[in-house]
Image (cartoon, rainbow, N blue to C red; front, top):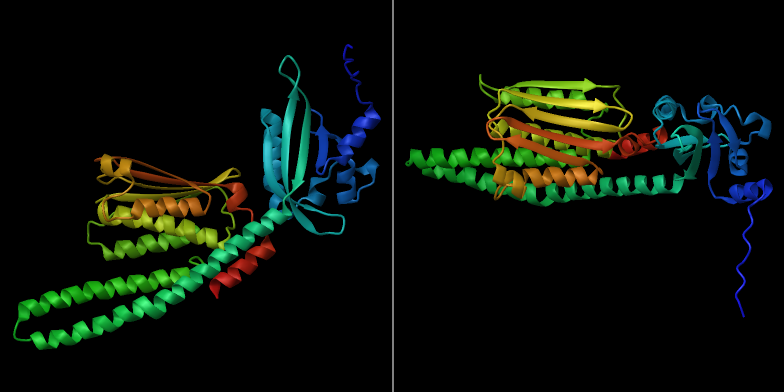
Length: 364
């Protein structure tokens, strides 16, 4: 017996509306110029708007003030360019509470390639944001624990050994050359202990209390210049765009990446100038460190590290921790450029209240 193919029927407008209302997301559409012309029921329920008031879509009233300017700018740019848009923003619920949402907006084009409609959907990512912040807080607690262990064990032991070596120098008064050699070694070890304490302090607290990344890097450059001789390189730190508030633990990792790159250029590149550029824009944070020094051996660059040295691998590891991308360019005799980029949705995303909580805990 022949098999009867089921008859396919198109949804009525009422049925299609019921399907869209059942989708667990905010859904809406816009005309080519961006004027909103349709919302699903979940939008109305979330914002508490009467249906007749939704078509104006008052962004000023529903987007968090810290996200508004950037989102409106990105949205206008998307409509002007015809490019899809994806952003994370906070939207105010009917009860006045803000929640994080991931918004995706795509154009529909006709056969001629002209945009005839925009469709958008927003997905609640509040729980994901909580999980990300909990992970950051856990990292901060772990750093504090490691700092405490280093201080109470390794650094204290080194300090005790130094005291014993120092006592030995008095027994070498009849051998001045050996005494001077031992004193030089002690000075190097003492400097290593000082650097270790600085690292421990960096693990315990936020590096840039005022959240001014450029200022912190300028201070570091000034300190390095003071350590050099009359041929020390010229340091420059430039900022492009409007500086954004960064989560403390992310800011500290970014600062350490910059610090490691600047120290490497200062100590090994024999550069005449070292330039740090920090660029804030709506897509990403970009950090670039450039020098005009001797460059990195191509074999070292290809392998990722010199034998016994962990500078480049350490930079890559820190970049991965902040969900960033680190790229290194270098030619012998032509200097080196290191670039770190981190998506704006990651590096700018912390809310004001939670940011303050993390800042307070990182400083304790």
